[in-house]
Each structure stands twice: as structure tokens, then as C-alpha cells.
Length: 161
Image (cartoon, rainbow, N blue to C red; front, side, top):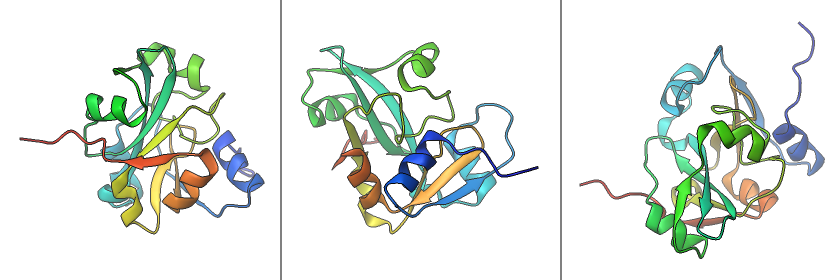
């Protein structure tokens, strides 16, 4: 089997000369972040999921969250200056981002949407994010990720309890 096909996320990082490590795992269909972290051996705390939401203004936003946390919609809306935000419908993911469910990377979407990364990412030298297809994670520095996509950090976690 020859060289693995590069995803838009990988091409974007290479073009900007940002180091990353591609971590692949066997997977034929969507699995959640906890299962993909389990398959790659990635620490759960340093593994992040990509959520795409739409604000009241109809603008799309990307939120990069630790896989074990839930997003607080009010905090997320406030972080992007919206009255409210809601998750986009699963069937619209590919049309909006160019990626499939379970392989949606905050890097290299069809269009770069305003992005917020949960502030816990700043506590890691490297985090794991989707690489742009099912079965591929990218391990990279969270500050470089924020730089390349123009993201900001904020506390957008739903408090449990």
C-alpha cells in the first residue's frame, strides 16, 4: 500500500511548515472520540473533538472541545458574540465543512469559520485532533493550531452537577 493520501488538514499544516504527527487507527465507520483515543492510545484529556454550530445570525462556528466534555451552548455563543448557537444537523456536515462525521478537522474545512478551542488545550504541549478523515488523528501543538486557523481560547465547557 503506497503513501497515505494527504487530507486538507495535513496539506494546510505542511504548507505553513507546522509540525504534526499523523496517528492512524483501524476504523470503518464513525466512532466517538473516546473510542478513537482508546484505539490510538492518546490520552483522553489531550484528545479534542470538532463541533460545528450555527449562530442566530446564520454564521457557522467551530468549537474544539476535549472529547470527554460537553459544550455549554450559552458560553459558546458568548465566546463568538452570538445570542445563541446550536449544533448543525449531521446530514449537513459534509456540505458545510467538506468533511464527514467522525473525520471533521478544525483544519482545512471548505471555508475557515471562526473557531474557539477550549482553554484546557493550552495546558498541553500537544493535543490530538481529527486529521480530516475517519481513522486519522493529528498530534500537534495547540498554540500552533490556534495560530494557523486564527482560533481563540475560551472556557466553553458545560459544568457538571
